[in-house]
Image (cartoon, rainbow over all chains, first blue to last red; front, side):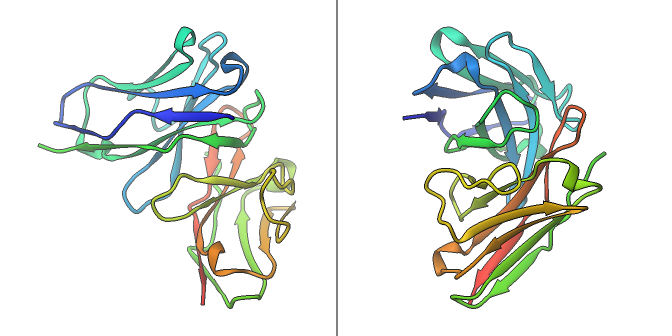
Length: 121
Length: 107
């Protein structure tokens, strides 16, 4: 059974750093890209970017380039999303999802449960 | 940048057919996918590659894509179909794009 299990809720202060995780199981981790999606409170889905677990090739969405960093640890089949300096506007739910095939336009067939991040002073 | 436009809301009576549109420049030349998101839950893929239903998605969900518009059609709409629906496509370069979402109300 394919599963993507994300790390738990985070409450941080502006300027702090953060790394959230997405643990994959039930499939060959390095054969499927992982995408990250942001959903701000009461708003729609925004694509942040994707990472190829096989070679760590990354494509960031235009609004997120330079603001977040994606990475993977193949040894533990886990993808990460990190911030070096959080802002209040980073308050959102963050989802990881699997591309159904390794193609940029491929749909996302399995999703994590989401990690809520709250940034407040 | 490439944009996908959806109506903010659609209402339908139980048992009737609901249609949700997604408009983008030459969208018919790209694959469109659709996701259902219920309150407090993660999105679920309901249509991929314009019209393919993933395993477990009821046959009442149907997708089409032509010209500038992709359409998600739900026939015999049930109360359980009440949710937000998002279309998604690739911009042809490097980015994935989501539509703004449509809230489907079954009343």
